[in-house]
Image (cartoon, rainbow, N blue to C red; front, side):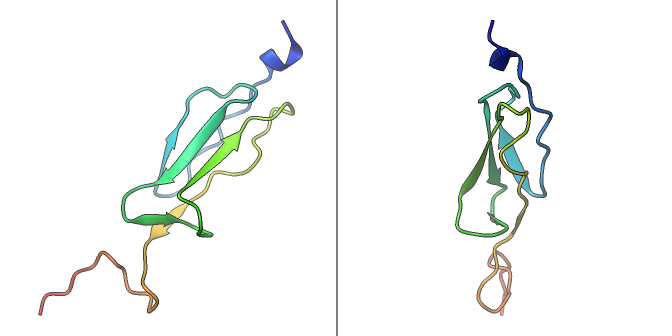
Length: 83
């Protein structure tokens, strides 16, 4: 058995308002983070973030968080106003 087959990363954790898929935490495994509905990844631009377990037993990034979608004026896009 190769050394890399025995490499494992710790749990990469959960950020706020995220859904994580991927349960295996071994070398070269990937966990995928997506936001709960009506939220976006903090930092923007991505619909999902993938982290990979490296040969150094670390993840190649950190668990993201998501925040509510806001319009240009900072108003929650999912708040409805009744007149």
